[in-house]
Structure formats: C-alpha cells, structure tokens
Image (cartoon, rainbow, N blue to C red; front, side):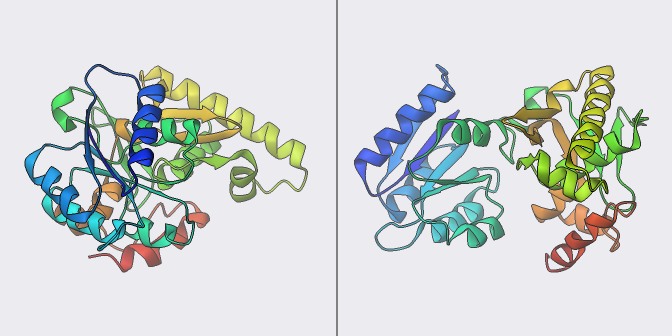
Length: 266
C-alpha cells in the first residue's frame, strides 16, 4: 500500500508513520511525505498513491483544498483528514473522505479508518468477492445475483442502517434509538442482540461474516466488501445517477433523511 502523509510538521509526519506501522504492519507499505500543498501534488503526480493522510492546517493552500485537487488527479485515492480541530469535519465529509481523525491520532480509530477505506486497494483486481447492495428503491442484498433471504427483518434493517453509514460506527444506543421502539433500554438491547446474532448467521451462510464489524459496543460494515449503488452515487458515478429515482431504502422511515442529501448531488 502506497501511503502519502502531508503535514507541515516533520514530527507529526513521523508520528503518523510509526502509528500506521503499529496498527497495520506490512512489508508492502511504502511511505511518501509532503510538507505543503505543492509537494503533496508532486507526490500524487509522480507516484500511485492508495491512501493520503492530509493535515488541514498547512501553509498556503489548506488540506481541504488539497483533498479537492487530489480527487481531480485520481478519484481512487482514499483521503483521510488529520487535524487538531473538529470544526472542519462537515467540510471534509462533503468531500466524501474515508475518515476524519483528530490529533493526537488514536490507534483504534486509525486502525478502523484503514479497515474501512472508501476505495478498496487494488479495486476489482484484488479478487475480493463483494456483496451487491441495492439502496435505491427497497433495500436488498444480493450474492451472485441471488437475493439474501434474511432470517429476521430486524437483522436486515440493522444491516441497511449500517450500510447507509458507509463504514462509520454506530453505538448500541444509537442503533436502538433509531431501530427499536422499546422504551425499556434493557429490552432494546436484547432485541439488538438477537438482530446482530441473526445477521451474523445470515452473512456467515454466504461466507460474508467479515462484512459486519463489532468493536467497543459499536457496529459498522467493512465497505471494502460491499458494492453499493448508493456508494457509487456518492462517488458521482454517472451510471448510478441513472438508477436513482428519488426512492432510497424506502421500507424504513429513518432513511428518509438521506433523500434530501442525495438530491443535492450531481
């Protein structure tokens, strides 16, 4: 994996390199470094970068401007913003970055960011089999063109909820608040436990158990194992635009909030 670290402070570049080596050790990792916008662009032009870690506050043009430029050069580069400030998160998310990490970078958050890159390293050439997920219209999941028959409807809804988060984690409390109507927290957690168990079993049946990620009382999906019309639409894929007809995961009321955002894209 070719990794670019762009930060105007040398100590921060070194610290992040050591952190990546710690959480995702690999002899295949190759690091490139840049201290400002211009040197980062040169690295992008000269090398095939897979993941770019960008500091937001750099002299001259900002990391957000750099992220926009990188997307123009190579849309397959995964961009992870790294900053000491929270206030730029919304601007970064509008650029559809893979992750937004706060300094000092936490090892667990860094590991999760690398596990849930928006663009799988190597793309289709890596031979990875993927779930085909349909969000436009009703939510459905396919393996080899055959729809998965979920054993519990709440398991299916849980998976839909996590897919819509695009790899971001959701806590048990957040999931229960959106998916279960129980006023009793204990009962909600029990329903969630059953939904998780059934979802794990269903995914395991098709050998996709690694799609569901569980860490620190939170859940997410590994987007590297998912092919999704919604993700393609966010990446401004013209073919995905043709598929969208104003209906999104329409069997679940909580998904209505996504429609306004989708209508502002492309």
